Length: 302
Image (cartoon, rainbow, N blue to C red):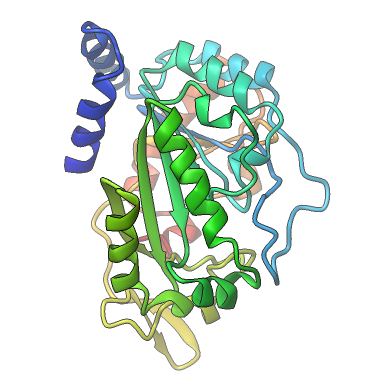
């Protein structure tokens, strides 16, 4: 909650004096009507990482601006926040990103992008967003190479610098701890000071039951004293049970234009493909199910 409040205060600096009123009105409408206040959007199924041992989509699709607009225009209550992110992909891979962000700003009060920081094109740093979130999996060239099979830490740092220098948006850097980067904490703190990163966060890599991403069992930081996972025999288990669903107030729209309860719960029968008010009504049922963690993927989610 503190992180959200801090982000709001920073974003307000670039908005009009009446912006908080619009923000509160949208939030109140979502609360009263029972619709989620946030939407996570996957702009593309493509990725810019080029990591070794990765299995990218064979026929990746890009979310069309028209489809995003249809979903937002049909919503009984506009989302307060729209967050562009990827599942096994990255928003910067989308050729439609500029149009998507422009549409998002018309329907929501806050727009953010989460990226691995690779594949930035000239002008991307000026996209109409309020917050850039750069996620780095390592803070040294050695651990980056061990995890990804390539070394592009310097390129990501340079892209963060570009956004910091040319964009009015808030810039945040998230360091995700994996097995290969579990000893990088001190180096990350040094890098944070050197690069003048004011907003940072440290998290642990999440286990991915689909096995398509870094979140394979062999990459989890089990050797770290604060790791949220441990091994029991040959099975990976959580060291604690979360009290609440972290995405209870968010929905996920994938690059194909299908709406889901979250990026992880993707049983085919759940997906909604028609951007209509009736589809949005169905999503109201998902909140209770997410709170109760009834989906199979909930057992892995932190």
